[in-house]
Image (cartoon, rainbow, N blue to C red; front, side):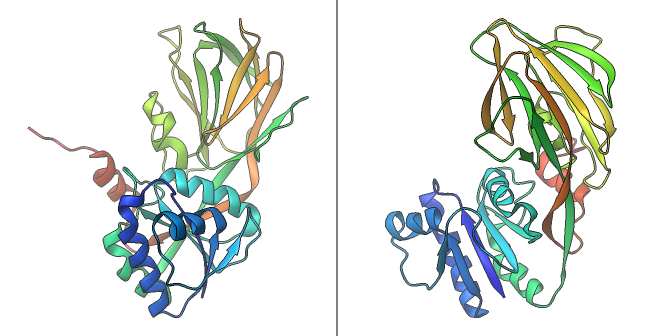
Length: 289
């Protein structure tokens, strides 16, 4: 098999996990290609030189499977590079929580035994697409987790006029608005009071950030519906965060958010359901009394 490897370049103390991964891949006689930035980190910072690999830049790679070693942020960056390539992504968690990258370093040997025996599952996760009038973004306008509209350059709230399929929903007076996929429902959206959504529920959550009204609550809609946003701000600009990649927009810019025409495929171990991850990662339902 051919694997494309992405990694976190800020975790030198966890280099033993990378060494374990490279050892296991070598045992299976796998072909490896590595993101150049990560390769430079491995060879320069970690002094790992005893492995053979092809290098690639950006999204210029092909593989049977992508490996992301780091946290969920590293996984999101890998997913952004994979895009429409239809390559499944395996996330090895050397970060903190790890919802997307949920394979622990201690499971590296086991997961690759399962992969080579074809004993794993692949989940398809929906992606959000952002279209924007009169704005050109530096980053791809696609989000696996969420698209957030946030205030910028001012402590004052922003007004976000929101419509669903052209029908007015409400105008949020808030610090921002988070539009999340089921995958992103356990990320930023959850931290601002959004609901947890099962990965295959075909839904989108709309959750305000610090709303100036007690009767404004999160709402869940179908993911084949279109969301339109128009923002007013005292500073005449606002921030759009696409899976944490920030873009600045001018007041009056109309944003349209919809489901993208492709999915991201996530590699999961057999018999590791979503609810088990909730219990283990978020201590869901735990009673410490």
